Image 1 (tube, rainbow, N blue to C red):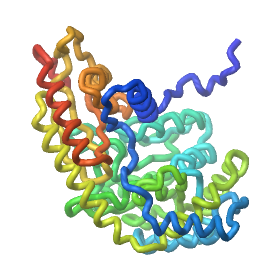
Image 2: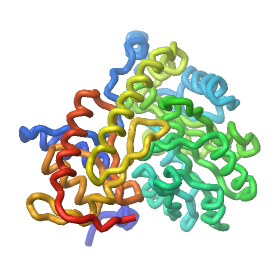
Image 3: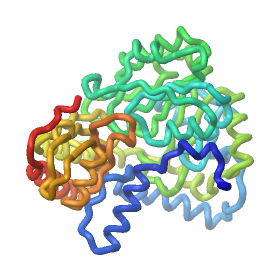
Length: 407
């Protein structure tokens, strides 16, 4: 008789973490591997943020804090929401957790009953559906293909909502596609949500500051203030400040919801790291000028990768509005044969082929709920990206036969 709980039967390991582990394993074995799987900026955490952490340690800020965050960090988050999003929150409407992932998990655990539905646009970040399932909810997927620029329409959202719908989760710019909703596109969704007062909105804004060209970020409660009382606005310092290892996420939302999330956290992890919270205060309150240079670097990398992938035989790569991912289609490679005689049956076969033949690690689209695609993170140097794309071009050029023209 197994000791493992039934709730884990439908949970899949994180594909992105699995790719990272595989890359490390192959590198340790001496293979020349370029890892494009991890969603992690390659820039170092800015010095002024690290200095704030050191000062906090020297000042003895190494003890437990309030379960849901220090007053100083909550005030910095309140100021950030007002400054960037025109959203007003009080301290008891803000929670700080050990990364954005814990914020989302706490919210689902605090609100979902068995059978409650959560609308999840696909492609989606790998953890959304599994967190819903762990909380005994039911993910309802809405396919948003490349023809729709990987974005959900108002009509699709309306059709997905049922009396059992508890949440809709929106992620803009998106992991894995990098697609971002314009103000008008977001308004189309919020207009639908106004018609369904039983549906709550969870918005994952982690890539808010990583947007390119003339794209303007917006968040649902900002676009439609009437939804403020049923929106949880989630963010964090991981991506914009290159603080993935510091593990600080946060959210603003209705007082009752935030209190319930704090109760879940109080019996799981308790407070986030006191040192990380002090660093996050500096990040949010400090000079944001460095972001301009980072965004320019990411944009140059995006343009390099999109251009080179579109020169690869059988690859079609849209240009994303934000984040640091591209989500190209490998449809025209499905059905072709590798030099050693293996048929590419799906995007998992394709990314396996890239890794085995050329040492380029990416993540299959199946992990994000939309095939036949694969995700590349361009959060690494232009030199490595150029090398990786040349390898992908070479691998695609070596495939033989005709594709099955998978849609």
